[in-house]
Image (cartoon, rainbow, N blue to C red; front, top):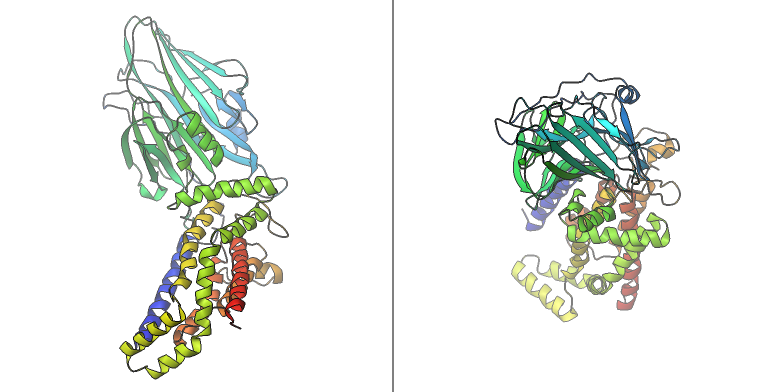
Length: 559
């Protein structure tokens, strides 16, 4: 078997593996079902020591609607320019929150995105804070405690104070404030007039029912997340069986639950905390912490302060919190991926261009043009070498035919020709190698940046973060398998790749040439269901490459 044939078979195998890998990593959007996840099994975190009081939370029976769940308990309304919801006075629980700046779908009457939901609903998602003790007889506020509200609606201008007295000389006060975005501050105060000293442990938890879909994408992390001892910790739902957990000790940091665009987190103070991530029930996941012990002498007051974030992953806002509030690596709540050093700057460039132009699609196209301009010198040299290769291709084929039975002489003659014509055959690969990290970084940006979610372009493109909806089946009404059901922009991209390929020198080996000719088709299907913004970027990049390459070919004297 010839070496060229071996190379061909290897290329076929690698291409097949690449296609299968892409389909596994970036599958088509999962089909929605009416399956309802079970209600959360409400479990408080493990205490900091075996003898600490642990008060298990009873299972609440799911209701049919959120409206019924909200009517079941007294509540205090929460509102600012970006969120609306309520806090349940029973247990002082954050369990009802909507993001008013974001809609669930593109429909005109689409409801706001729901972030937090009561435990009695189909998909509970809530946060709660309190105290633990190793004294089994000490009455502490728990999930059944009905707090007294001092004040009305919780807004940036009007903080909320909650009070509860245990009847044994301990008064618990909770002061809650919210800023104009998504950050809450929870100050817990204990006034001790019990006649003796006590020791308490602050705790907080985020509990969520999350049924991971079988075909969910793995390109963006969804699940438990936090920064513990300066290290990012990420756990997917499939990482845990029921009852399994991962425990850490940390000074500061944060912990929570992240989805593609939404995020909740408890931001810890600088005391030593026991942090835990785990699965407490069927599809029920929890991030929680127990803080360092706080001694409260008789006649004294003790306080504990934590922050709670619940909102959208707005990158600039997360950076603001990280800087102004000293939250370590808070921007890593956004899954920037391996190319963080490219992905984050790319986002800020796109965001700047968007604010300048006013349309994210045009911002992406201008970004593509700027990238081509930045790589112009490298690409220019590469295309010049490729044009020379195309020009001397008849000589190359003649050498291959003359010395086809003498491989050593063949290589010597080829190297001599390259040296004489001042050609570097490897230089044509350089732009592609540079484009790979750029491609994946931009792909990440289009998948993680909420600023691109539901961002329209022109024509039928209403969401640049979604695949092109103008597919063959949509245009013809004929059912077509999803893999073959391509949109207009992926087809245009494939055409530009084909044109660009025709301008490049062909491989001398006929089998390799056939394989090379299939690459536009392979890439068209590979990228056919990617975010339309990425396909638009790639198409324009190809067009600019074609223009540049054609100008250089004319300069070199190649038809």
